[in-house]
Image (cartoon, rainbow over all chains, first blue to last red; front, side, top):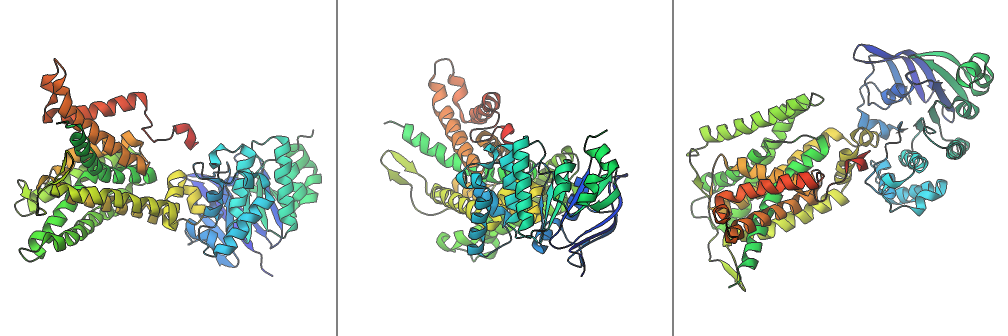
Length: 238
Length: 310
């Protein structure tokens, strides 16, 4: 069986500065894979390249066996790759419901869209209570829920989540992580980028540690969670 | 006779013409944060497109009832072609360039279009008469509405309603809203933002074309430089209403038109200000209003505070 997502020797640069220096990894259907690492390691750059917002200078990206090299950003979501971006980026002046509808921008199956909106409200009841409210008035955690709900509206084969716990209170962070666990148990394939290594690794089937544009360590989530160098560098232990 | 209702109607009509042109400024700004200073010339070429249909395509003596819709189509085709061409060949290559570059390009394009019409359009060195609708003015109570203004009276609200429907209800319209708020994220949702930009230029041009025909009918003549002052006024209207907001553009236009008309009509009555009431002062009052709004409500009448965009 071929992997759902295959990244091979991917290199991305901003001008002359290489931010991603030839990384390779894969995501199989049904798995949760996480990229962890500090700020500036190239995690967000990797995701933005996968969804076409940045053009790679080298390497291969194959999604469902098809190369994404020539696919423009706005067509990637139709292939089944959804991206919940870093910093959430909800549409602040639209209502919550309109935000969710934009997640289904390319779909035309009205009943299916309504059903999925209801599903998003079941997953995040607070969004249902405020469906007519402008999204910009939500708290950070609620905006994160909306960004995830919106990404799910495209019925993705692979959901990419960039720093879903960033800037959230510990309680809200737990909630978001519990939701990711719930999505995983429903069989959603997830590529999770996190600075919160502890939470990400406990959820993940596989993890990759990134440092200044390279993957320096790979393994199963549990192995990395118990790896001594990871514990020292990312889990704050001496 | 109380002439205030008449002055208000005059202001409303003038203002809805400003509003029609202001839509194009505000829509393009909302999507690409570019002030398309050539938009006044898109309005002007639309008027010449309509004149071309009447003078050189339709047989002499065609009734205005048949001619006007065809002139409107001609105006829309010319304006849209110019606007989409400008986007494709002048602005798109500069996307991502420092903001001054497209701004200077816009000013250059504005002058080039004016001069092109001046040099190549037959007899366009001076004003050319524009065909008029027959029939006398209409009277409603004390208010008189000129025949030429009937078009504006119908076209402005109808096109606003259509635009509102388009932006709120259609898929492309929702894609436009998304692109205006966050272009990169709009792409992630599957919105083809390059296409949305073209649509914004084209829609703005359609409104400018309607405005161009309205101008011709209202004033009875058009000329190559008609887009300059009117473009500035329309830009003022867009800023007044809150740039980026389509309803704001129309409201800003109406406010500007009414203020300008009332100032012209009544300021001379104020003792000591009798010199400042003539028509030639109208532009001065319009821009003073702009300065006041920028001082006290920089986001415009309907504009969001910048913090809302974060």
